[in-house]
Image (cartoon, rainbow over all chains, first blue to last red; front, side, top):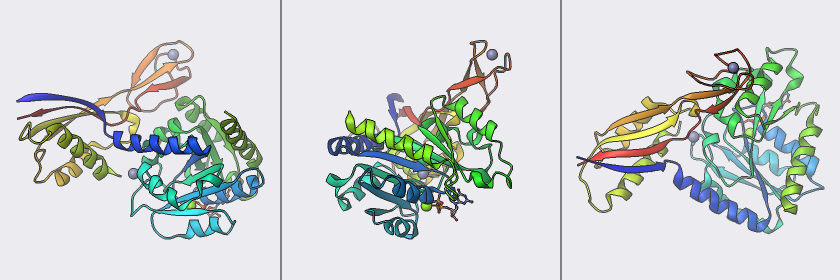
Length: 220
Length: 113
Ligand SMILES: Nc1nc2c(ncn2[C@@H]2O[C@H](COP(=O)(O)OP(=O)(O)OP(=O)(O)O)[C@@H](O)[C@H]2O)c(=O)[nH]1
Ligand SMILES: [Mg+2]
Ligand SMILES: [Zn+2]
Ligand SMILES: [Zn+2]
């Protein structure tokens, strides 16, 4: 019997494709964010509001990673923004390959900001890079403030955390201080934005932040 | 949740190393990952048993080197190894940063015949 040394990341193949996507985005000067949350936390609602907030600033496009139907893509399309639906075929996340396959459907020469809505899932989207500049995580108050402790990787991989549905704070047990503290314990650089995508409260801080990220990227 | 695709990548790497028949059979596969990485050994083992049927890796044992969670204290400056997520230093009760335990799934080595 012999031992074969391998020492290779299992997700190496995905990393390679993600890097190729990244090279293409750099060439076209496109800022990309990968939006992750559990099902129903408000990803599509945030995408719709972000489009409205930034539509005079950037040319945007959206990739929707829904497991099945095209509801979310239809919601986005109503804002008059190019949108591609990825057929994840029941997969629990989107990966580099799926994004690469979706790109020919977009006119990348006319996009400044590409938003990718991941599949609703708090576990694996964090593991798969797609060529994004940043991962953005959304956590909604009804889900509870124990999520950083239970799903640490998401918080570690994200550049910003949007705490959504703060309009529901009076009705749910959500310990804002604990959520913040635990999230920062995992990732001290995390930017945290408490917002309500329903009332618009706090939304402007998020919109200005992402606007600045895109501007800085496009200048460099 | 996507154990089958992880296992598929693992089997692809094994095929790559076999390079047309340098070994007949894989006896043991050793993997590592951080305890906070959200990987479930039992689910991985099940997916591996299913996906490796009829391949040189069929029946191979999976061994996991699970890397610990490490927290670094912002108050006393010491590092501690802990069983799971905590935001408190076990030594002094101070605030900590999590500095280890999120390593992704790695294929370390395999024993072959
Ligand atoms: N009260 C309240 N409801 C919200 C808020 N944001 C979104 N919602 C509602 O939450 C529900 C789910 O929102 P979506 O935007 O579809 O959530 P999602 O994360 O895209 O869901 P999936 O794509 O299915 O994972 C909808 O009924 C939204 O109207 C908010 O800030 N406050
Ligand atoms: Mg959605
Ligand atoms: Zn997955
Ligand atoms: Zn301490």
